[in-house]
Image (cartoon, rainbow, N blue to C red; front, side, top):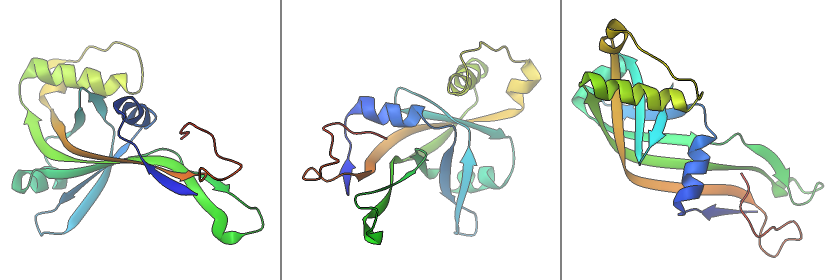
Length: 167
């Protein structure tokens, strides 16, 4: 089994769409790695996140706005030969993207971002109260780099190989 690098934008967007959370890595104020799971929205190469107005992640990002965001599809155990332990692999897809967090302060832009986030989970249309919008911190991360892999793919010489990526 092999790992395949994916560069096609539609496949990257398909992988993102299959996720319900992402993992956001940053550096905390003490210089230590800090990773949190978050709800998200995605549109036009921008990842939208939201949080409380204060907290450990906000303190970290005010000091260093660089983030690494990871998405991973639900992995599936697969194998090439049931009797050979080293032929077992997890099959799935992952994306690692990097960027900088910019906190959105404009009320109308925050509402747009919240709608993009909610669209990841439901087609329902929402309205937001003024206090709700004012009390949430909206993060915008324009992806500056993206690395996408599909792993656990049967080797092209394998009898299990299909000429399309599945994840």
